Length: 287
Image (cartoon, rainbow, N blue to C red; front, side, top):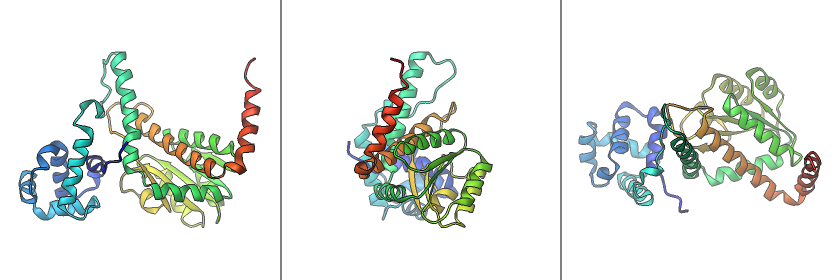
């Protein structure tokens, strides 16, 4: 699958952090993407009731060199998706029948992973894997649904003999963070990157020499801007978010990527641990 620079995804994720005028431009683009590809800067500014300077600022905020590159990215995305409505996120509505729920939840989860592919930086993944390979100790931090992902990460990395632990409450996180030193790695998993407990833990970690890897939503946040390495994911904002479904799937996918990366690069060293843990667990199956 070709990776397309998903400008609509970027707009959706950072919309709430834009200036008021940039937000007006973003909302117009999200509402009328096909029309925008035929607009000049002046026309887009008029349509969004802003100014040409606001349009240019939005392009720069998104990381584009200029308006032309911005428009080309929108056109490429529209061509890639073919405006297929089935690919869009669909909220689960009260009263939906089970067939609709099965379809929409599954499609939303698949789309979360696909959109995460658009925003995750391969060099950042490489840096994170290298830090985890050499880590003396790994600490996973997360609250709520993110905490469940931490537990999954702990289970995986324990299998390859990594000294690690998942911390899913504020007090445990602060206690653990205070004990980390140079050579240790903290992996902070947070949807918003602004949870009070997570921010407090991050502040404490910055006073140590431990490395910090962040797994968080594609957005500007305290966490994403303060971590040594940030791995972004993308997921929809929907009304019914039981168990933070989309974000949890995207986070688990990144954990799987990191684990597989470490296991692949260190396979000669960790093969014996994988076999040992596999055999131990195999003996626990009912024969």
